[in-house]
Image (tube, rainbow over all chains, first blue to last red; front, side, top):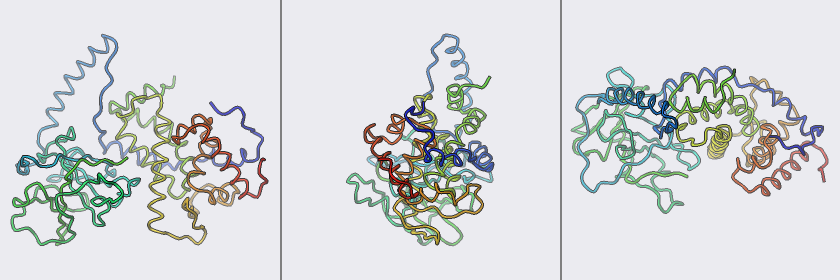
Length: 232
Length: 179
């Protein structure tokens, strides 16, 4: 595999030797074990079994998985689903970043899966690392299995994402992020609480164009993304 | 007999935690060393952990499980660039670091690596891309062809960049250039 033309006697080669014996800290492995326990994988296409025997096993497993999926896909939460989207509203956007391990939402004290409600930072290579994306199913409480069901709300205090001027196809939001607004008169608590105590609220008047995030006496207004988000 | 990586990846793609933990055991050391060389010891563990977690989340998008190593290195290098951009925005200054475009290392006495080695001092003066190409070739032991693929450049470009980075590193280490 390695380049046979390299001179192993070169002092520059030997200079790398101390680094070659460096090991990561044990805490990294512990954090990974916890992280993958708490973080679900994105759904993807399963490999198609090639042999009949494997196909039969896959079908058998699929029956179990489908049954399990029907069970786990039951709505998590009360009847707080947002009003149905109006015809002609923009399609949902995509979740771009993985959530941070251990930092999940809960409903009535019980943690909910990441694909029910998630909060993630934008990708740094597009300059969106200070933008937060709140992802949920259009029927809040149900797991999101595809981008067709996904709605995302955006916390973008510096307008890094909303007005990316070097991208002619920059996505927009339905309204602006506002860091401090009065409590909406018709605010309804959804029951979802983030690990640090932040609460998710909705407003009947604002429909599903806006999500309100409350921390103590501070109310933030997060607009919904208007277009699919793509970051290359 | 040790399970092959291909089987581990396939099992992990089905959500098998133990299989992915085994992949972490196999790949974390190499990724960590690459991160130390490219971005410095302070952020190496965080960047490595972030890389592996992103890999877990997106593992089912990996169509060629044979390429797991290259795929992980790509994620890690992209993450290193994110960190560098964030550092440049925040403009964190360290007494021991020079303001170079590649973002300086900051000293961490808790790290086991001897920071007074010539190599660390030499790497600090290079850009991120120069460190990356040197680390991929010297640390990850990749041939030029694979280095080029990891960086997304033609092989000829990778060769000339590698020679240029080597020349620069030798210069900062006080050694005479090869040519």
